Amino acid sequence: MAPTSSEAKAVSAVHVGHFENTGDTSHAFGKRVLEEKAKFVPWLDSDDPVIVANTLINLCHRTLFLLRRQVDALGQRFLDEGGFKEHMHRCREEARSQAPQAPECPVCGKSMRSCTAKSGPKAGHRFWGCRDFPACKGIRELAEKA
Ligand SMILES: [Zn+2]
Image (cartoon, rainbow, N blue to C red; front, side):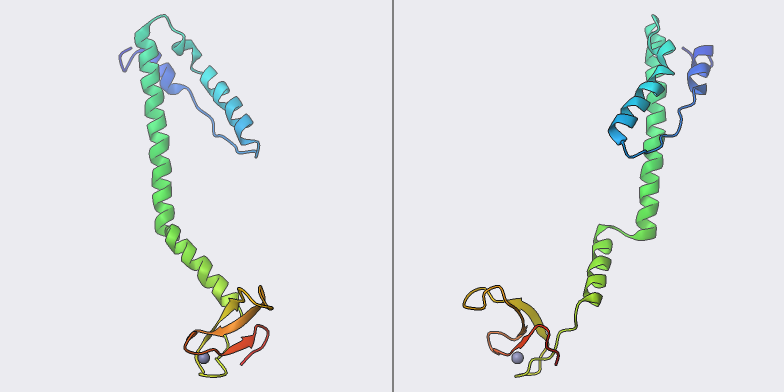
């Protein structure tokens, strides 16, 4: 099948439709693939191996075009929205901005951090502990503000 043959023109003219995600992705996509494949059956089932091979090459070119378009879109999204680490950083900053502000230590005045008692009669109890622990043993109740 030469590039200008009637078969080549016919294969190139086959329109592959847009896939609409309906939520039932695996079933809908599998059904869609079979429907799209059926459009190429006249050439894929040809007795002429050259026509079959050229049809497969045409399908490979189409696939590469779609993959390139997808990679370009991902690249643009990276430029517009940033990468994974930037997204995680934004999520962390947002969570921190909503977290209660840490009070000052009643003993040394340094910033405190939320802690959970690991043992003793108050095991599992949450409280504010001094960031300078173990040098400073200052604590506050979690609901307590400085
Ligand atoms: Zn302290």
